[in-house]
Length: 125
Image (spheres, rainbow, N blue to C red):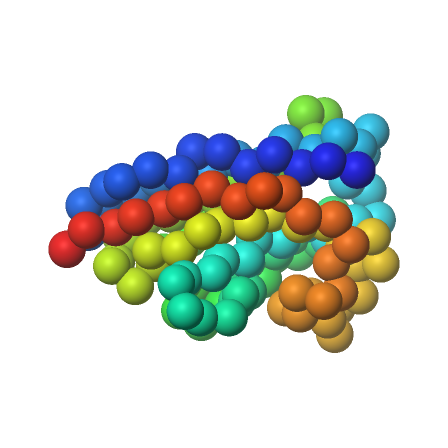
């Protein structure tokens, strides 16, 4: 399985950006697909995820109300719409697939089996 994330870039604080992640799978059914990020010198952290079975979405508290995760199963692509960006959102953003889609580990990076290469988001204040 291969994932390719794109859409990162340099934006001003308060602006918006949409990330996309294309996956080389035939369907997202029964998977969880998540976004994580890693800022310089920090550990990778959970941002958002969508469990395709039920289409439930999950967010880190730091992005709730500003970011929206969605997807298109026909295109096997997920999106992360990021609004009201802050300087602390600066990081490399990764998309990942959890083939087990277990709710209790939806926010745990080690639960995800496949990872994309990451796309850099830089928010200047």
